[in-house]
Image 1 (cartoon, rainbow, N blue to C red):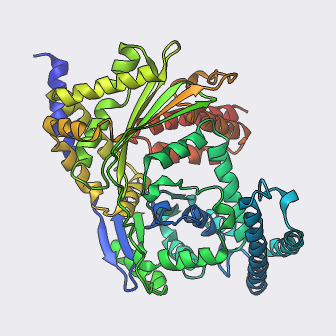
Image 2: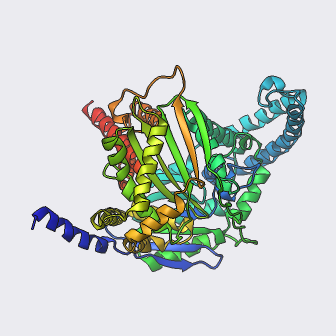
Image 3: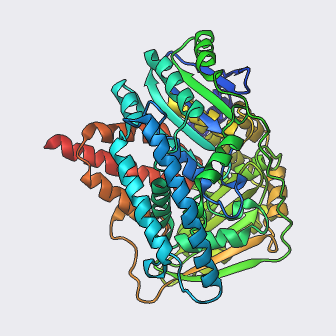
Length: 577
């Protein structure tokens, strides 16, 4: 027998066993917090954080973007962190809110004039009412006084002085997560810092931070070649579900979120019953639990349960299409509605993604190496908390059209519908997933992130159960879901053609193969790296990225690999100096 083939058979039979169970200990605090503990004594550090089960899908029209805004506000400190004079700080916040209330009355008048056609844009200073301009001056004086009291970034400074690293947060459609890595002997500091910002948060600089978030949206969406088109495509794809609006919020909503909106949002969603605390690292579970209880049980329980998202996406009955001209290479992006987290069909759909994606997958082999209609392809299955989608697309080769790529994609899907996947091909992608599961066990932070994300979606146990469910998927299961979900009437198609007069993609060879919306993001990251001179910071960033290597999303993995390469090159350059 061929030795290589024999080796492949042995690996195939052994890999599923590699997906070890993460030994999560679950506890519940008296006020409603859930606590998840994973003891790991391989490194003297602790990855700690918490996930709030709230994201953009829990928002309402008029305050879209508030979940992401809150991610920013939770770093503003407490009465003892972030200010030189807590009492005056709170007085200034109250006075600012009074003035903003008067300004909102003027904003309502300006919006009325806009609806009547008397103004073309309510954000232009020349269209402000005289009273609004007076209030602006008064508000600025209050802001300037408060800035004199602020101690910038004190929350971060306390942590870094104690040897902590990687403090960050994220917001998605379904959750908001906060995390940091601390030395093992600083667990009590973590307990105090994190419980304090939940018990006594101070939303200072609220309106200034709101402007920062608005600018972040502009940079991440409106300044990229297809960012605005992508938002419109997503909004077109979802008919009723709150996944239709962006995590960053609609541009007209963000500037109108009030501190009262923020206070109500915090009281409803940032209550103990809606938060899970997670610790992974070098500690004894019983001692860690006792310390967590001492600090976090000070926080009062919520008075009402946060509402669920009850709007169901109706079945789509007709194909949707969008045509756009943008400063990008010609490409096609296709979405199909699928299923949510832990749905029984999500597992064969995950396998289907692996069959299609990466340079060993069917799309690349068929469209890039085979028919040569595309320079790059991708496939992503995303089962969110309430619903899901499957995304396939590709960039057209010179002389070919997005429609050529589109038809090539359908041809590959038709093969999956008509023919059962061969056993060796199916086992190969199962092995890939099992290997990815194994890599999750290499360090505290990757384990922490996996537990957090699954808990945020609804059940941390999925981190231990997903591999067995995927290993049980059959060729018949794959064929069934391909036939069920990849129908013409259930899809939305975006066709992007290059805007006349726009340039081609970057000449940087490392960026070849990235999608058009990824290239400007990578360029900005590279520019920031060239400006960074702190080798320690770059090494820390590189270590965090390497800890997360192995994502099953091929588009994201390719982007991560490029950025890691650029970071490593920048470190080498600085160390030579």
